[in-house]
Amino acid sequence: MVTYHVWCPEGGKTLAPGSTGSVYSFQAMPDVVAKLPYVEEEIRERFETEKAIYRRIGSIGSIDSSIDVPPAHPYIVPCLGIEDGERGGCIYLRRAQHGSIRDYFKRKGGRASMAERVRWAAHLAEALAFLHGLGIRQGDVGGRNVLLHEDENGTRDIWVCDFAGSGIDDTPALVLAQGGFRHPQESDPATNSGTIPCELHALGSTIYELVTSHAPHAGCGAWEGGQGDDEWMAAKLLHDQGFYPEVTGLPLGDIISRCWQGDYTSAAEVAEALSARIPDYSDQTEMV
Image (cartoon, rainbow, N blue to C red; front, top):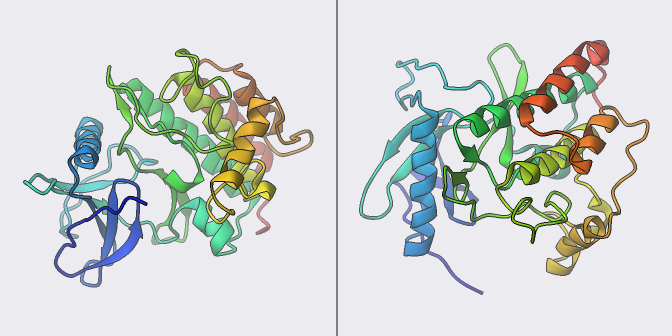
């Protein structure tokens, strides 16, 4: 097992360790988190890419709550500041009260109405379309990288997050989507990690996760909380062999299936299809 080391910011408390660094919360700034990289050089290179992506996205705010800077996109986690330094620096982000949708549904037993779930799916596709338009490919689209936040009026929505190892311009993505999300033809340069077809396949799986509260083939333990690498690989092997969850009769099932089958050519197409469905579910407000 490889052990990585990270510098803890003053007053910070570890909120979530990750593959490239750790996220810290602050008692004095409850709405802010700081992401710091592990000190190893190869990890810090990915962190530099993440900083470059947030700068590309733009509209960087401030950790000072009295300074209001509108976010660059409503469905991408707001960046509140970027620091450079010999230890890799730091990225300040707005904190999402409910964590990732993966944590919210699986670990916290969270509930949501179908009206919310369909709206979040449309907003996720909009965020990916925006990123793709900037030459950015997230690389690991899935429930662990989609945050759930709540505004002062109690309205909940999603933010896409985590761009360490993502692709930008001609720099390929260095991260892979999880089993159940990854494209089955990942060895093909046209559909490997960070390509648009790969992103859209993972988008379909994430829509499935939003609608059902669990990842594709979650019964085989192929996501966090499973039984190790063998379980994680089970969903990948099922998809590689052409076995996908049954989506007939599932809300948004036809759109999910088309994402998996490669019928869409852009996230904007998926966003348009999803947005058209929002009115169909607007009265389904029961929390399930």
